[in-house]
Length: 351
Image 1 (tube, one colour):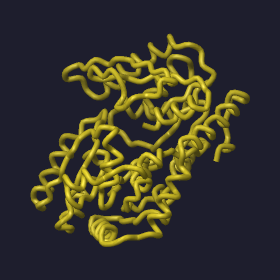
Image 2 (image 1 turned 45 degrees about the horizontal axis):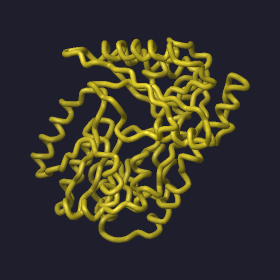
Image 3 (image 1 turned 45 degrees about the vertical axis):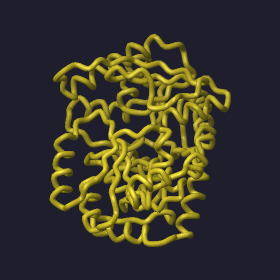
């Protein structure tokens, strides 16, 4: 999402942009239509039955590196994840590469551990989407990163009609990101057990990793607690704003985030936000959100959020979303790109 939105904002400003991406399982395009001013180059990654995660990571890097090695010369090369950073480094070296660190992951698969490490240590310059992530990178690796936050298409979410979703589900709490450990789904299930009369709707969930055991455990606990979540899976991009706007509250119990784009979209739609009390989310959302640390806290804050209007938080949320435009994010990236192209390094000139 970040890659496409930034690419489109850069192209709208007159820049020449090409996006390279892995295409898994026969994919022939992204989850939505891409502005035709952005060229898209998809690199097929055929599925191999029984292939372990580590081998799939190495094969993906090899395939993407091969495609990037044939790419036309570019003034700026910018990787958005560890796989693309490793592939770009193999294809053209790391001295001409910027990389955005969206959040710092912790992996146990050796191939992923090595991929993650190289993608932070090796690129010539780093970008982080929040001060909290930049501080984590500096503390862990001694590397300075420029901070440029995400954008959001605030007008699209502000104009959305949520009534069809309310007609379908009644009063519902929405969570986006699927069922996985990083998203804190188990805590949300425990919280919803304390809120009879509210329905839980979970959207999204496409990931490279296999969380079937966690998902089975969470759903078993939900059944034990009498919680029956509506699991939508991946949501069509055209449907997402309405789904957001129809929610009585947006729950964001993630235990690790770099920014929280989905939560910003909820604020743009005027929906109350209850999020995990993490430093990064305090930094990004401040007075626009309610914060909780455990299931009981989430239940209390979600209950308060849906009980009545909170014009102060709603106004703060809409104003915050309006400030985080993709046009502004693209402008800051351009300033960084020019500095990097001129000096081969980057500093914090992009606030």
